[in-house]
Each structure stands twice: as C-alpha cells, then as structure tokens.
Amino acid sequence: MTRSEELFQRALKKIPGGVNSPVRAYGSIGETPRFIQGAVGCKIFDVDGNEYTDYIDSWGPMILGHNNQEIKEAMIRASENGLSFGCATEREVEMAEFICDRIPHVEMIRMVNSGTEAVMSAIRAARGFTGKPKIIKFAGCYHGHSDALLVSAGSGVMTSGVPDSAGVTKGCTEDTMIAVYNDLNSVEELLTESKDQVAAVIVEPVAANMGVVPPADGFLEGLRRLCDQHGALLIFDEVITGFRLGFTGAAGFYHVTPDMVTYGKIIGAGMPVGAYGGRREIMEMVSPAGPVYQAGTLSGNPIAMAAGLTQLKILWEDQDIYTRLYQKGEMLFEGIRRIFQEKEIPYQVNYVASLGSVFFTETPVCDYVSAKTSDTKAFAQYFKYMLNHGVHLAPSQFEAMFLSDAHTENEIKELLELVKSYF
Ligand code: KE4
Image 1 (tube, protein in one colour):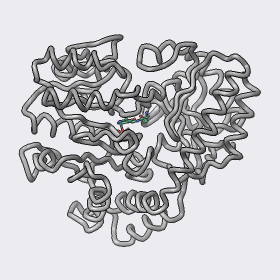
Image 2 (cartoon, helix red, strand yellow):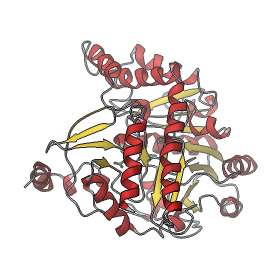
Image 3 (tube, protein in one colour):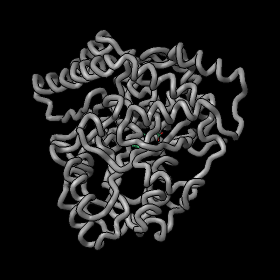
Image 4 (cartoon, protein in one colour):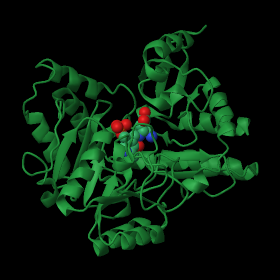
C-alpha cells in the first residue's frame, strides 16, 4: 500500500470523502488521490516521493510557482508580530490602496477569506444597492458554494434556479436565473422577462469551471450594454482570472469595465484570501458604512495580507511575467493543437493566456452543453497516463490547466512529448 493510499484510508474515516474539497478526491478519475508532501517552483512531490510537474498550481494562486522565497519571508516577518488581532492593521490599508490605486474599476475593496465569500458578499451588496432581488448566472460557471449560486445548470435558459445540492432550499435559488454562456439573447430574454428586477449579472469573464471557455467576441461587451439598458450591475467573478490575465485581470484584458469584481486565489498567494470591490457608491453600502451586513473574524488577516501583497507587488513590478505567461500558454496550447491536427485527433483545445483545457470531444466547446459532450472516461485515462509519467493535471475534464512563471520551456516540451506519445 502506498502512503497516499494509507492516508486516504485514514482520511475517509474522519473527513467527508477523505478530502477538504471535493475535487481533490479524484472522484471522476477512479484513482487514489495523491497526498502532497511539498512543492517548489513548478514541481510538486507526493508522500511517496514521486515528483510531478504541477499544472494545478493550487487552482491558480501559485502564479509565481510554489514556495516563493520572497513571499515566505514576508509571512515569517509578519508572523513575528503575532498571527491575528481581530483589529484593523496597516497592512490591510496597504493592500486596499495597492489594488485600488492600480485597478481603475475598483474604487473600494473589502477583504474576505475565500472566493465563495467574496461572491456571496458581492451579490448581497448588489441587491442592497439596487433594491432588486434577481441575479443572473451562466450554466457551467461556478462561483463558490453559497446557497443562491448552487443551482443546477440545466441545458438552457431558466427563470428560476433549481437547487443543485442537497440542503439548498428552493427559496434560496428561486431568484437565481440561468443564462447560456456566450449567448447574449438568453441574457436579454431573462432581463426582459424579469422586468428590470435583476440586481446583477455575474459571469466568469473567462469561464474555467466547465473547462476553459473563452468569451466569444462581443460577449462581455454585450453584457455591459445589456446591464446598462436594464439597470443591472455587471459582476466579473475574477477569482481565477484576476491578476492572471494581467494585473487588471479579464477586465483589462478585454477592455470591459464591470461594476463589481470578486477576487480569490492569486490575491492571497496561497493563503485564504478573497475580496470584492467596485464602484465607491456600491461598496459604501457595505457595513459598517452602509446597511449591507458582512463580517469575518479573519478577514484581512495580517499574515495572509503579507503573502498576498508581496505577490501582487512582484506581479506589478515585473509585468514581463505576464508576457512570459502568454508565451508559455501559446507554446503549450498551440503545441497540443498542432499534435491533434497532425494526428487527426478531433479533440478541442481552449485557452486564454496561461489558462487552458483539452476537451475530449469533437464538438467545439463554447458553453456548458457543448462542454458536457466531452468523454470523461477518456479524460480519466489521459489523466492517469500523465500522472504516471510525472505530470499533475487537474483531476477533472471540467477544470483548467494553470501555468506559472516557474514553468519553463523544458516542462512544456516534456508535456508536449507526452501528449504526442499518448495519442
Ligand atoms: P473558493 O471559495 O474555493 O476560494 O472560490 C470559489 C470560486 C469562485 N469563483 C470562481 C470562478 C472559482 O473558480 C472558484 C473556485 N474554483 C475552484 C476550482 N475550479 C476551487 C477548487 C476547489 O473547489 O477545491
């Protein structure tokens, strides 16, 4: 029995599904999840001493690579003064100023502890600001596990969400409407039908939770126009894309300005940090400035702020990182595309900059329904082959590959050789 198998057996006795977040259980793969001992740069090591090139990168935060020395030293220095005070600290002011001074559409920002909390709070603020009850999300987009957003994707427009999880009541989801990603007509239909009762449209500006699905040309601009026409706020959920597609995220990458934005992952550099922000008039609705309640014992935790702010400063000061990430993404994903073309493999490759997915389907993937045509069993075989050859991919067809500044051309060439040998 391997150490991972032994740990997983023990974990199953005390932790639901043996993991603290479902995707880590490799559920759709049918393989024992690897328990990780440590990581550095683009390499991750499991408890059995196996080394992998890592394309999960903790689901996005490790954009500089694992175990960055500068970030670690900042955390150690901060921890010398204590771990948490439940009081305001200078570093929280620094973090807020650093972001607001560099991202024009973020005039004010509130730190929370996860992407879920950021989205949940942003929706509450949007409803408080507009006085409207409805929200529109997109089938296949994931915005964390708050009740109102755990709605089944369905296969088309839904004017009232059906809970997608036990324990979520109809009452929690009835004001959540579902549109079709990359289909502006579906959004206009819902906005028109709900007679301007929509507080916000929330979107992953690059969808990455049905696998990676880029916005079609004009899609994000169309959402901006429709929200303006119908008095709804446009919320970009940039938990994945924030600080990844550039320092100003997808909003800067696509030149579309949201009213609010949510962050996670990179903003905390691997520490539990989420944030939501946007126009001052909206954010001043949030307690204690305004009537929208939101709170958190560890929000703005000084150690987490030290980690996140150090990472953001590195990204801001060396923006060549983004150029390198674009180049690596192009090398990797265009490389896989070329292999598929040469070998006449009908599978799809979707990517934006350093974020991408291979879909095991002949159907071009532009939304949830087309993403779901993928052969998840074929993906599972591919995942296992890669794992056994030292490459750690996301253990699901409907997740993304993340590149970091620590991945070099060598790792990308190695991966392309493996893809070529597999297909
Ligand atoms: P967290 O609560 O997991 O920090 O963030 C929720 C969230 C919100 N918005 C987007 C666009 C997200 O992708 C996420 C979380 N992403 C998943 C990966 N697809 C986290 C991995 C996991 O659930 O373990």
